[in-house]
Image (cartoon, rainbow, N blue to C red; front, side, top):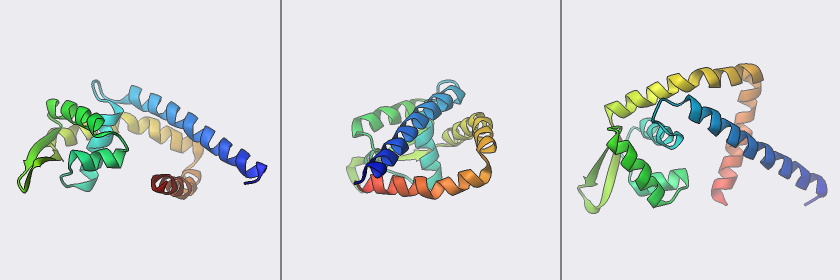
Length: 146
């Protein structure tokens, strides 16, 4: 790897890490009271897939331990945002689905963060954001395979 390639790689990852920290901070502040970013992420995923998932599947999707996912799911269940039931085919497993209250909470969170996200896209320009998406998706794919 050339020195120029190393410098570009370091600059790219530095920008992504710093942006991630800033974005998480701003999103966390914009979330409705009591909702954490991890809660929103799980609700958003469950709403998108529109099907039940096991805690292990969710942990894999979010690259967290099963224990961390169990903790998040417990909080979501306590809030009434997800339903957790036994898998009728394998009693050792559980299945998680978003509840109607979870859908409402997700929509409330989206409403809360939309102005901030819209402002960012407006300042950067929709075309620039659109052109960045393939690069970011490609990076995620490469990192996910590593």
